[in-house]
Length: 543
Image (cartoon, rainbow, N blue to C red; front, top):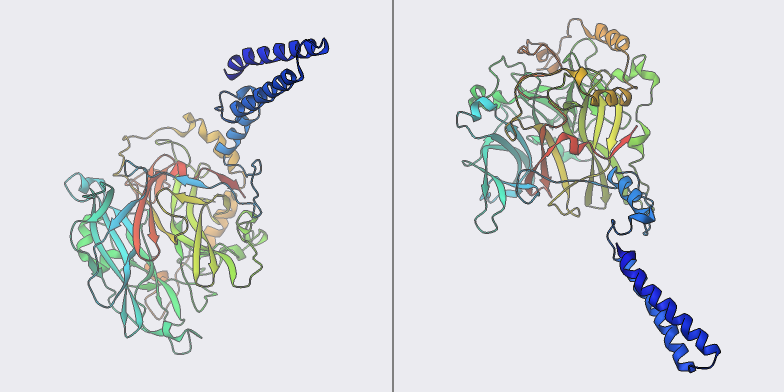
């Protein structure tokens, strides 16, 4: 210990100074010697302070304060015990270290260079679907990836979707692990494109022209359907949201995923009763009965059934949900006010959602230990400059999906936070680390006791069943291809005895299972990060 080393030196200085002072009184030493003794005493104090400043935490553990502070920071509590100013009360970030490479950084996705003279930017904002394990075991590539690309036609931008199969490789010079297309990417085209009505898109009239596929979110349903929710020109509005099964756009995909019927067998507009002229970034969410809902937005929160008599109607306006706040304070706290009017921030949805059982596999999923997770963005504007912060939002797995908590800002190791980093989608990756087969008993897992305490705000089953009764009746007639009708088509059965769990890791997973976070960088580049769901959900702020 440091004090064992310093103590003999201090005793020597003290005895020396004592002797000097004593002899000074007796006039046996000169004044010069007194000044020398004082100088040595001051020097010893400086040495002591330097050693304390440069000691390790174990060296100064006996002071009893720093070890407590480190413990609090490891739990990601709010900062405040630090020597620097924090005028905006920023929370400590949750830095995610990727497990898909030896350096712990994100893996870039190489979709190939574009040689078209009308190309604008790179291939960005990726979505990745892992192939079922049974196909990977037979030699198939592990992943099917999608990316956006933009083409300029007479200064009018058209947004397209390309896809390819991916594999991990190492770059030739740096030796960095990246994902690369096995073959040249192909384009997935809509069967038909259309323009928005003439009265819409004011004042941005250029949006009326065929936009193509905007902001696609690609994911598996609980039955393994490869679905895409995307924006495009609305039939009655400027920009609306649509859904389609990717097996319609990519026929060769059918034998490589689920062999069930195709419900969304044409491009169908998603319903919303109070639809705006421009809509973006909706996602689909499934409850504990696997009933489908559309989540429209978190601020002044709105979500609705995808089918049935209440399709498109906000469930939060129905009793008893109408008695609750639309937006919890934990989300409102993310906003900031700026003195300059050109600076502002807003929160909007980013990724699709996943269902997570909050205990290690193979504990049995229940409505008390299972939640829904999605990632939202706080978008900061300064003129034309854009910056994002990312937060995972944790919701109950039952209607109306009450918000339980959110995380602090998610940072991705290997990306400059000054860049515009967009979180596109999330998905389970069952091929990255294979988990053992077999089911377990939830009652034997001690972590479930903690989850019961954390989910005391769960809605009562009586309220959920009342709403379920309201939505179980015949669908309504529509004039155009509608997701309301298509969603009612028969879907493949889930063979598991527990409807919360799917057999092939499509929509549901456990807290220690690996997820992919698909990332767009500056509308130019693509990347992916692999991390256990547990690490994403660290640094929770309860709502």
